[in-house]
Length: 256
Image (cartoon, rainbow, N blue to C red; front, side):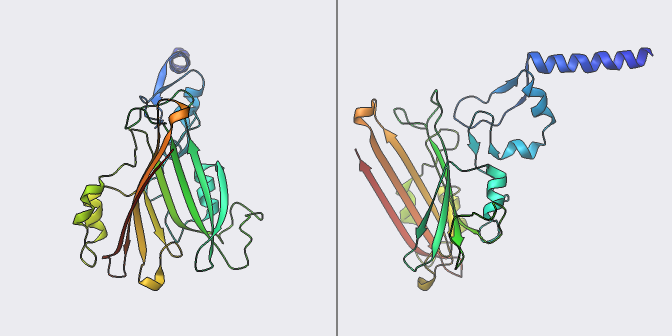
């Protein structure tokens, strides 16, 4: 009897600790210090599988980019992405120059109280887009079911101004990338993990492109809303069937 009573006291003490203080560290990635859950939700979080906290949306409305092994180009479907990430912030359909159509869904996050950004004087924002091939005869509306396997993932793109996962890159190093010689592994070693990756029809198969990676950085700079300037830069490297760089393109722009 005493052992049972002792066990109940221990359980009660643990629950009280959860209710009164912090427990497991949350996976917020808005640039601020990682928070600790407080109160009753903490117990719920403690009982959740680690994988559920590692990807998708977080309690503060933010989201984290899934690790590369979670979603694979050419294999993962629209339904799998939505199941992992939740409903997107927005979506649209576009037609490529070759007549193929893609559906694009985007997850956006701008914290209400700001966040730690890579640069000072920029808007803290994170945006993650997924591109899906719309099969011939498909309306692109996904009206049948979110779990449809007809719509395959053909591209993903992240842009972030947060210090924690910023997508900035050093464009001065692009001169070291040589067509017909540089491999994708060498590019990643030079510039880090890309913020975007694509396969057909997002690459030009007619030109011998098999896949492409991209580094992109977009920020809104300005102290007040009246002098905000949008700056963006992107470096796209396509690779052929031998895994060598076949096309290298850099663009940048700044608009008020």
